[in-house]
Length: 422
Image 1 (cartoon, helix red, strand yellow):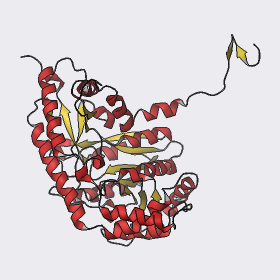
Image 2 (cartoon, rainbow, N blue to C red; image 1 turned 60 degrees about the vertical axis):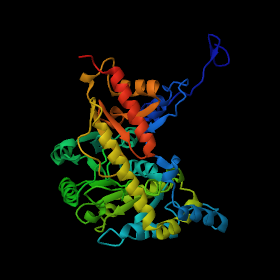
Image 3 (cartoon, helix red, strand yellow; image 1 turned 45 degrees about the vertical axis):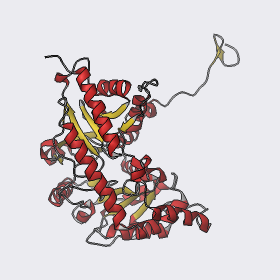
Image 4 (spheres, helix red, strand yellow; image 1 turned 90 degrees about the horizontal axis):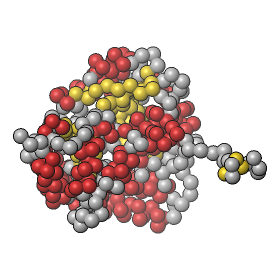
């Protein structure tokens, strides 16, 4: 051995973080990137993206000019070129508090609002703030895998309760009660639902709150798709039950304004009884914020104008397009025997369909289905295993109707090519 070398090779003392590598495989982005690598470069047809919830590339889903002007005004004002406070600038937090309070039976304070770099960072902050030795968290199946990734990274134990497709994907509250113990810190719900397209009724949300109170846990309510409801059930924020059990709401402007790339979200404590503060959770949130990054200050500066001045007709237009796209998607699914949808979507940008492998040849599972679909048809659909439900598929319907029609024609052609011979 000479100069730190062994058999002619230098020895280095650093290596991969195996935990980070493993948990990153759980994300939607990771799975979609792998599927994109399956697309045949010789296929001259455009790739149809029915795998992710970002319709901003389609002209019909362009955000409102009011939001664009707000960003421009904030930049040109030269008032937002400096660092933000760790919780976010006061005018933006006040605007978010006023915006969310419109749907609540009490008024939020700016001190209840913590601005984040999108809803993804809000998940990161909250799960790190809740993590402690032996803690566990209750997650929905199917669900959004970012919770799995951060739960694994923080080394919290993750326990899973089912969403019930036969009941429009309601939470199995009996399972929640059986899973919880003295180390359970929280349960997660996503409303409107990703990946299922469900919208919870006020009655069901109240039962969730009552269950959380009985178990002594808080409710993490992911409402990034808030107000994107177009069925028979209106969107109801979980925060209206904050007096029953503490609720932490996660949200953003990403989906309702169709600007996921602007990375502006929030973490909100709906806790009129002050339970979170009493138990030190607010200090933990602040502690994590002190060592993390902030959303761009000029985006924060634009928030009051975006929230206060966006017209209802913009929101109505987006919801109507989603309703029409969901109808197209739901009807076209009926023409393809190897997939079935248990209930018509009521909100968000997705639905789940069950994959019937017994009707297919040369398809091993949902991941194999999606990889071959990408290769043969340049069509990207998310395998259900990515959201915790093997041999199901998550389909995004938020896109141009012509893309949807083309996508389902390709999906039908793929089915016919792989259908089991009778």
